[in-house]
Amino acid sequence: MREEDINSKYNITIVDTDVTFKCARETHLLEGMRSLGQKGIPSGCHGGGCGICKIKILSGRNSYITKTMSRTHISEEEEKKGIVLACRVFPKGDIQLNVVGKIKRKILSGQKIWNFS
Amino acid sequence: MSVIKIGHVNLRVLDMAAARNHYENILGLIVTDEDSEGNLYLKGWDEWEKYSVILSPSEQAGMDHIAYKVENDSDLDSYANTIQNYGIEVENLDAGTLVDCGRALRFKLPSGHIMCLYADKTVVGKSVGNVNPAPWPLDVKGVGAHWLDHCLLVCPLDPENQVNTIADNVNFLSQCLGFRLTEQALVGPDADIQAVAFLTVTNTPHDIAFVPGPTAGFHHASFYLSSWGDILKAADIMAMNKVKMDVMPTRHGITRGETIYFFDPSGNRNETFAGLGYLATPDMPVITWTEEEIPRGIFYHSGELNTAFTEVYT
Ligand code: FES
Ligand SMILES: [Fe+2]
Image 1 (cartoon, rainbow over the protein chains, first blue to last red):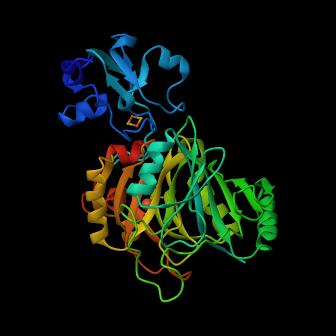
Image 2 (image 1 turned 90 degrees about the horizontal axis):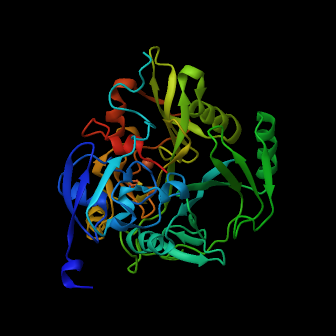
Image 3 (image 1 turned 60 degrees about the vertical axis):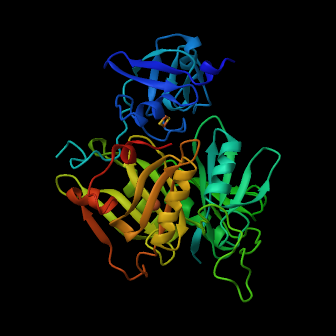
């Protein structure tokens, strides 16, 4: 591997929101985004367990590699379609992605905890 | 006859090598065994039973089961009856089904979580021994967690459809197993929905707790440290090891505990918890938090809930 590959930073774009940031190949997308103070992908456990950072990659299978993701949140089918957890995705090239609907599973949401009163 | 303490929690992990490094070198638990299926058994230095944490390799993060210890072997028969009469199915497990434990009971809480009761687990002793012990061992690793203190479980709540498995769990555990409610949060227009509940079997503020969510899940396993200074040092060690922290050192209103929330490498949340809070003897009146003050009950200083804390669980 050439040295510039090792040090490469890739351009990551969240298509729907126009957020872009640079991410190194040894940094997962969620950490890359957060460490630059960017927002867009919901951030949770950073371990592939909670599912909150679910995204769909539009730039193809060759633009990233993944680490193990909890099957509770990403089925084999989804994984094949590029639906993955941002905290388990490391870039190998420029990436375009979209956030997959934030999982609706609030425990308590701020001051107003449930909307039935 | 009584349930005397939390015994262990069995967590599922996605990457055993990473999990082992986290629990052994960062939390400072001691690995006491490893079986042919790849399960890892660990204990805190201040614990005497062989393990309080089982890590199991899995494709899904989360909790497999939680176990509590009862006083006498014969209690298991009485509890089996009581639980069955309450309307919950109980499975009798032969000795050894829970590794290094005698016979045990397994059943589902109303929230769907699996709980086990056992009376006997192999004793290996505290790291400092029982005779003229030092206050702490010199060879402890990482943050040096003393013991598994409690777990917080996410329980289905859907008041519009009359579903409240937090209240159901509280009922079941207090009626059948002698758990005592120490703190609760009551919400809704009539402040009659028990949305958060903390229960104890010892004299500490909680040995188990429940918060609401749309699906059953695992919120965190908490490990005891003795002081606020230890909490600061724990946060330093986590930062040095790039552990993903969820909530920086602060205090809970509920239980008064001093806390850090962070995640294991599979996304299961851990807590380091310091301070014994208060003495929760059986005659202590229940403490109630109102809906507006729940955020302060949870994070006393900020008085705000962060979204990861409320939405993220395994
Ligand atoms: S942040 Fe939890 S799975 Fe990515
Ligand atoms: Fe806790």
